[in-house]
Structures are given as structure tokens and as C-alpha cells.
Image (cartoon, one colour):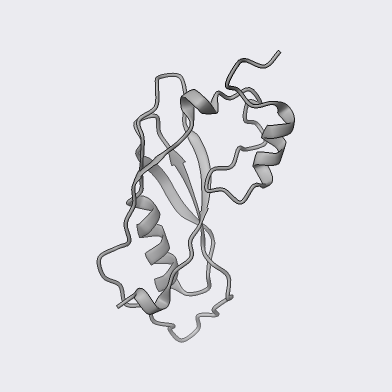
Length: 128
């Protein structure tokens, strides 16, 4: 039986492949109460300044960086790290700094820590 407001196993399986910032892991509970414990981004921001250079020896992959991180019940981001590199250290550093600045809504006790990944698109025309 699935509790009211919880997702079914099929919905949980579809969510794993969804292009959302939050993905459930293989060991996530299928009945996780997303209505009570779902994340809502409260604030985000890009680093205030950045210089992006391709240095000798760097091999741009033309892929966007993917950052892995955890969201605590308090809404704080913890353990942010590069999961997939763009091949350019400055781009990866910029993406990582952006994810570390994100804050989510505080969630009720018992919701736990959510492991997540963010694919970070960087508009190079907007970077100084």
C-alpha cells in the first residue's frame, strides 16, 4: 500500500531517469513522501566573477560538468564534488562554486539527506 502523497515504485523508477536536478538513487525508498519532503530551491547564484581559460594540457570534452552533492534537511548543500568533468578546470570550478551556493527549503525532521546530481550549463557569453 502506498501512502497518500507518496510515489509508487513505477513513478520512482521513472524519476531515476528524469532530467530533473533531483534523482533518486537505486536504494531510495519507493514510497518517499515527496509532498512532505520534496525539495524547493530557495536561492542560487553564480560566482560573482570568473575567468575561464583553457590551459595547456586541458582537453575540453564539450560536455557540461556534472556535480554530485547532498541536500541536508536544513536545506544546505554538502559534499559537492565534480562527478563528470568538462575537461576545463575553470569551467568545473565555476560549476562547483555555483552548486555550493544553492540553498533549498528546510524540510521536516525525518526526511533525510537527499543525494543529487546537477548538470551545469554555463553561458560563456555571460561570464566576464
